[in-house]
Image (cartoon, rainbow, N blue to C red; front, side, top):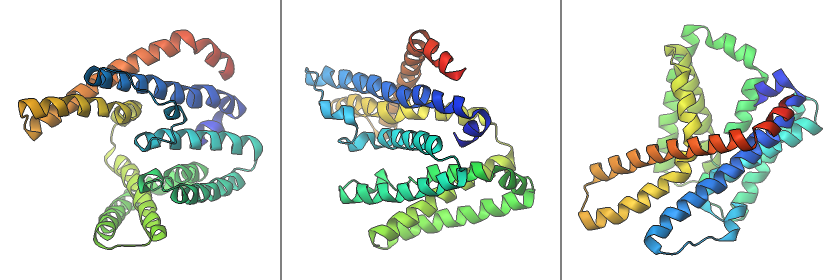
Length: 269
């Protein structure tokens, strides 16, 4: 997002509201209806809580709230604040404020333990040239790969071995998150991993997060009756989720293309 904003300026910010924020929310609503429809097959009633429209009430869809929050925050900051580094500092402070809010409202840790990923991505974009130059040296990439792997293992061991205060837990999770992202990036640079696979996975990850519950719901009931073994249950859920993701994404893309594409094109000019 930061790189696109640097390249396209105001045109990207105008398009962000529609092509990212609005599209994510519409996609969420569409997938939510699909989930509720499948659930109604077993319950014989379509139960829909209007509060789910706000996302905040449902811990299962925490990532939708975080994505929309980050998009809106990015849009507002980079429209109001012209200096990129100042915007980055404010963005980081607001992330901490959100963590405090989520903690005070008794939200589970997974709501905020990966929040650092967004400002870290903005930081990477701000200093992209220097970072890319650093990673072009093979020895540097290898050193970072080994170092981040060690940090990831240590962080996991620390979190799962010792009880810790919430602020230290969040800090450790943030270190783990940054290390994991850096590990993936250095791995891709070092081994020349094809970006097509990562792009494909990222384009379907949003759908899989929401729609995976359909598979669990359907096959969990079947497993109790048919005594499925664990491997067969996993394969069934994985296969059905992948197929459902492809189908729903295809439908939403077509709806978006024929319904909203004209508005989106005008905003990009």
